[in-house]
Image 1 (cartoon, rainbow over the protein chains, first blue to last red):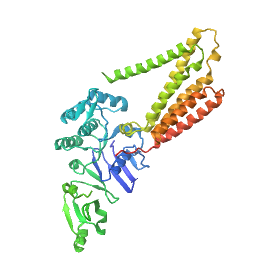
Image 2: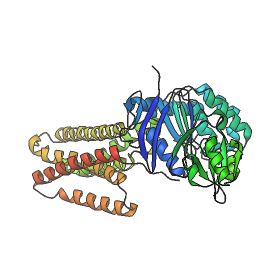
Image 3: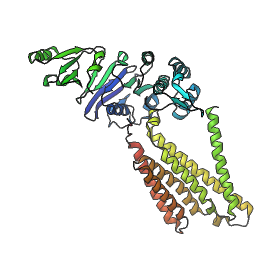
Image 4: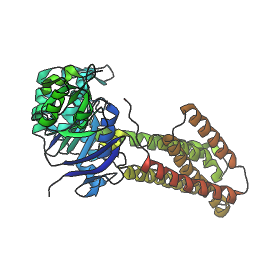
Length: 270
Length: 193
């Protein structure tokens, strides 16, 4: 049976969302309003009510025990893990949440990401993770569970490229679909099949980050449906604009620049 | 130390505490009446209340695969188990008392209205705790209201019309159960950004 998710006419704030998520797909969710991303993830995780709009294998996901058995949701900002002991972690998850952790894989991730160096063990044997360590241990745990993953802020506080590259590889090798609430537009773009964007203009867009072209353009009525984010000045960042619209902009002497995905971040206004 | 050993030690600890409290009640009562169990029942009720207060649907539990329904079901089963243990303790108390004084009348001694009242107290307090765990009012207000309710519950033991008290407790317990189930099933989880 193919495990996939279908989101039909989901109303979230001012956004109307339609999306299909297939098995093994990696979906990135980005908005400059972090509330929307978290809300979206909580709804598709079946934690908050979706009003008959989200389905997993044709079943409504809200509080659905079958779906809950096959997916996990967590936010890397949270202290979900308080130990580095793989045996203890896998035992706790098995007893409390009935989740099977691949213990050897967890220990492998802990070792390769050098999480021990991001953690202080107090005299009372409590594990205090650094902000980087917290994200890494959360990701290591998630990637060691054979479930669909819905992860918010997967690279929160991460600056080391080696860590991010390691996570990219692990995410690509993970079975099941993965939905990532991106804390950074750039970090994981190479491995994302679909980028779900909640624009600054109340529109919901699905783009392929590696194939899509972007423009930085002075805001005007003609490009209304292509707008993604507000840029500095009276400019906006848009997805690919058809040539006839661009010609119209030329006639009206509206200035624009074609930019790559790597350059978007520097144009974003605060 | 293995986790299952930790759980075993904790469970043994709880059993020891119950046994010690029970022995303290039996040894110090001197009066063969089930009413002597009141404080032990109230302590169990307080425990159930605290359990209910913390047994709420949170993002970690739901995120790692526990459904809202199973949170409520698990909580109800735990409270039922507490009630059952307390009932068994009451039976042990009766047996001890009968052994100590074979002449006492069992029917007089084993007052079923009191047993129902005690059992309902635990269930009511557990649902009450859960209700206050889920609603959003200032913490200090919750604690004050819970304290007032516990004082009232303790005071009700002196009222002779146990039928009225038991009926009220049943009414409130069932009402709170429905409210709690609806709350836990529908509450929208907040995001702490």
